[in-house]
Amino acid sequence: MAAGVYVNDNGSARRITAIYVNDNGTARRIQQIWVNDNGTARQIYANTLTATASSNASGTCNNGQANSNPCTATTNDVTITPIGGSGSYTYSWARVSGDTYTISAATSATTHFSLSASTPTDHSAVYRCTVNDGAGQTTTVDVNVSTSHQNLQ
Image (tube, rainbow, N blue to C red; front, top):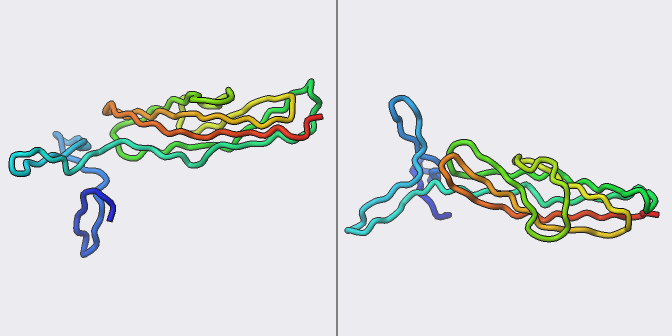
């Protein structure tokens, strides 16, 4: 069983993913629960923000255009999914290393990348999406981006 806080649901252990309290009619998500364990404070629940990427990004340009006519390779969409945290999420994409791509939606959870080239070369980079939640938590996800420019005449 993975680490976490569980409840018994008719004989099945169910992991708690969120805890809410009623604050004068408004549901408020609890960020942490601490207990006193013989004089030592011990955290038993944390609504920690993490995130995952749907995939890495890759694309190919293979249209046989002449060198004076750049070929633009566009990757598949990549979607970042936040897990935990609270409130609304914001997203910010930035290059970490490698070639410079055009980011289609630099402040969205879903984006794709494009790069124009005039010679038959492969390109790659690492881009990072920084995710912030409404409670001030931040997490990052790195995505590998690659494109291939082939058969350029």
